[in-house]
Image 1 (cartoon, protein in one colour):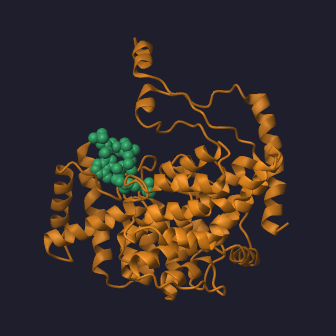
Image 2: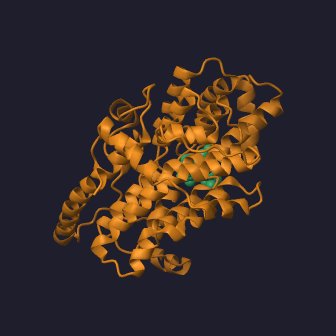
Image 3: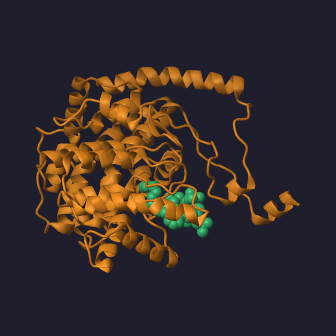
Length: 432
Ligand code: HAX
């Protein structure tokens, strides 16, 4: 058994037993209360799911197994310029341990070994109109790989419950290994006349993905390492992660559950916001007739957007109450690697202008930027200006977190998820 799988198996079995004992002894203990406004308000804050791989603190941001983003950057094995490799984050999420550089290299090789995409996937993608939204192509590409599902085959052969995690591990590893090829294929067919680039197996996961997209620039490889690391997981309650969790709980295989999650990521209030942000910034630049708008001009445009009844994309969050550390990490990257970009200066000016305006509305709970406020400007800087593709990059990264969490869910024997709904009639009777 490969080292990562063995390490996971050892940890999972003991946690499974520990949690069963905890549930038996303390199962009746109350850990939360639910208010009517939570029921009517998108279930914000209700604690109802086990999610091992990361936890979100409203003020401090995401912690992957207890490590903040700066700590992750410090401790995970990195590429030549010091940006963390997402392979290391996956290892950490699955085992709770920081891997060595050798362990990360072995994982890179393992993913390369599994990376061959069946021809039928490319044939399926080629049958779609090239202008089909890249997120739709991405979901279809994932679904086209589903016939390869190890879990689905072994389940139909009578897989015992104690082995579910093993088959889900196999599917998740194969899926993660193949996603960059599928995603790059979509990019090249949609925007580069179908001139595809073969993988380069001498490269790590991120650099190879960058290569297949069309860039061998060292700085862009570093951006991809950072990007694929910081977008990977944001605890379990966000729409894409929760969807993968919910669908996986029915014992749909990882292809089916991950594709479902990607359909959630494709919404403008969630992952599609990265496309919406850069679109909004370019519309503003066009509208104002300058690439270097002043703070006053930006404030004016923000007000116009709000007056039209629209949200300011890239700002606000359902859980966070401070600037998103994923925004800050991207800002630090830009400060280090990029000199003199009008677009990036504009992103930073927007950061100065938007929060007080949103605060003044008196209803926005978090006026600060989220992860999506910065990512597009970085991508444009390196020549990737096809906005509609951005959410696919997010999706490739998100696979690492939600699939690691899915392996945990099956190893811990998590049951079918089935919360209770109520009718308005029931609510009216309840509050009488
Ligand atoms: N611009 C304008 N109004 C905003 C706003 C923003 N950026 N953020 C919140 N509001 C408004 C809400 O629309 C809501 O108004 P109504 O009561 O009139 O409906 C009010 O403020 C209260 O909302 P909230 O409680 O602060 O925020 P929610 O938890 O309901 O929603 C959202 C969180 C992220 C959906 C929201 O902040 C938003 O729409 N932001 C813009 C879109 C965006 O950037 N999404 C990406 C989020 C991060 C992510 O998932 N990335 O993938």
